[in-house]
Image (cartoon, rainbow over all chains, first blue to last red; front, side):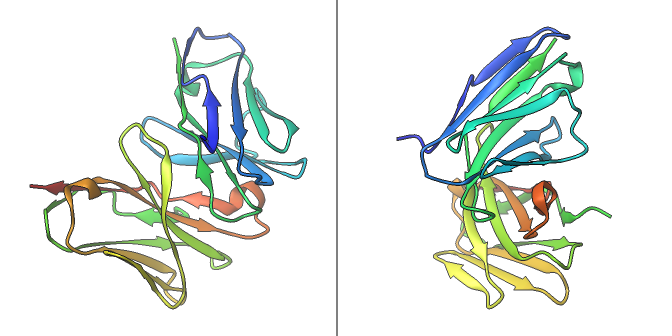
Length: 111
Length: 112
């Protein structure tokens, strides 16, 4: 019944590793997003993906690459993890630019 | 200048009191407005949309002033369960990823 789900919930890894976070929504929405919430709790958009069109936030390092195999999934792959990547990553979905529904978050800790 | 500004608080308020907080946004092209609520270690959840005419949902009232680029949230008869962080959100159609902007949130603590 979960509308927006993410896996894993927690991710602890070493600097330099590559990791992926998965997101799935069963709401029939056409737009999905990735957000980063840092230690100061500031929630910032990273990407949005609407009907196969990726809209990139240019402040996001290119080590971050979203991949959408279909409308219901938007995964986030991170290469060469850095300490500053430690944060909570939230996936969200919506109809076009409407109300967004968030997943439970993935807590990433880079050691 | 920050795009969406909120007083971070914390606001410490006794149970049953009325509390109001505000947010200002810098982009006059903003088209839609929301208040989200985020509990500790949880995801943000939509509290209510904000309409130009103002709108109410139970104990919660939201107001929008487009001329002043100002949004408010009023909570009446506050409950312990209202303790959370309240996020002001503006949406700019056609702005792509940058069109979805969150404030840093206002932390509210309702005290018994």
